[in-house]
Length: 533
Image (tube, rainbow, N blue to C red; front, side, top):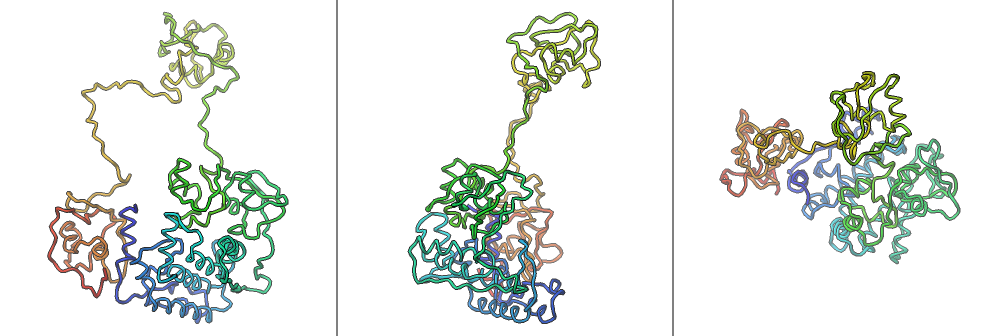
């Protein structure tokens, strides 16, 4: 179940819609390096789409209400006009993305349109985003028509994973699901020069130079999946570590691969879900995603891992606890019972000892360690009166050289834990458990009610939406009136009773739902011309 914080932020998208919006994909401050016409096109104000459209994701599944808010015809038309204007006015303008690929600046606008179309795609009147969300979370028909339509659109998109989907994923899907009559047409990707036009027929080159792991030489018949399975590495990790193309597109037929980040792998099968795989391997879905970070937060793209290897434990070198084995070659032994304590025993030396040794002329810590088969570390633990350099041995004095039982039972040894409390029981505080929600939990805002059912950190209530106050955002989702919020949190009023100025400080926590016992204010809520709930 999503956390209240997640729900609240989703509510901005789902519930908060003003009559007029105006936002830019490229602020004016970011377009100075382009020509005047290109800069004007990039910085065009978008007025028919809610601002959340600028960050829309194809890997996120939205609610029916959210999709109805997002997928407006006017918004789609404006985005396409924006893409057309940027494409026409920014010819010859290129940028290098985070993966080192050079793309035309119009690719940013094209990607926005593509993401919008993917999220708003419908089949037989249903949003495919909803259909595929249910399929991914609960399992079902892997040959769903919505998945076909979505993959076809991806295969025809010239950026991102589009070329890889076209060359491998889409043909494989249509073949295995026996779909016919849905050809994908390749859209050429603009390039800065004719020589830089990518080709889909050449194989990628593996990059094992400077490998910090082991090298694997590709053999005849090897595939992306077979190598990752035989070498115990997640398929996506193998591609990432060797700078190869996504989805195993044009996997190299020769050369060396760098194998690192190995793990215990599992081959994802049709019908698998994050929950089913995690449960079968006795791990949580959070662990599964952390071991395989290409799986998104909701496991919504899990179907894309079918047929690949994924990690069931942490990839890479495993942590091994430091060994408690002695540094000398001697193997120390232990006694089962303690011997009588001699009268000349050294101050602070343990009285629970299996053997004592009296220091003679010429003795040193080094000779004792070698002759009596005890490590220097253990000798110092058994005799804490000695300094760290062991230079204060006293002639004719006895020291302990053999522990009784496990060395971990002696103070100062690794793993030592006191067995009893030295504090009288009646002096101990009451054993009252106080849960700590956050290590740096903020104080309640001044005069905020304390008997509150739901309290939020002010840092999670920063919305910065023009013309809409923070209280109005909370009202839109939580269903409480702004008047109640001001009553429960008097500091929100500040010097003004104007609810449009109501905002939350990052320094405090606030009550946003007093609970069933709270009195509901009869004050009017914000006008519906400003908020559509």
